[in-house]
Length: 296
Image (tube, rainbow, N blue to C red; front, side):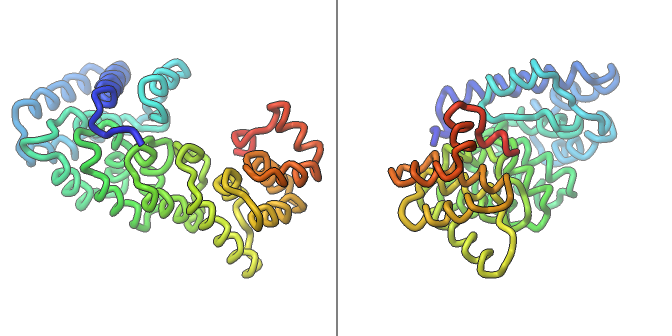
């Protein structure tokens, strides 16, 4: 995983904050621009908690609830600036809250306790903003235990603010936290594809967990999300190939394609023979016409 305090990481964060500020001010009317600029200036000199909390709470009233609505070029600029950063679905209120927090100092006072306090009192829309902004905040590594608390909550929208289109988990979660996050996504019906770094952070323990999940579902006669095989493929050997062979024989085309993609990623030489049981799908994979993104 990247070093949390690396100079390069800090420079990318600063560049992302600058982009967010530019995009937000471009979309605000003059009165909203003036208010936001005044709050930024005030927080630069007055670090007291009440000043922050009042400004944070007023953001939706002052900036509105419209969409940030990034263009294709702006979306590409976000990705180029900070890999996996996808703020295209943010609201103006999200962007305003996150910008205020991202410009705070990391120390004097420490950012992490202030973030915890905001999370404890946040209503749902505020909590979503708080977690969407994780990659831009000061001292991001210090927030990891607090983010873990957010994952344990029962609000799917908050869980997805952490897990979807957000590079923070990929960068800062250890394998245990990462694997727990992926498994919980399955239990609450959240998609795996929007998780940034899903392939990069694949690991043998997660593959085992996914297979156990599949066997439990099969035993209960329940449907299995085809996405789990994406986590299994790179580690599929022996008995895991038997699971993939079973899925390849499914009557569901999406499951068939998922099994084939997993077999194509397997390090076991026997996987190639199994893949040829679906020659048309195998040909599409070999020709680059089928990838995981095509199943989303």
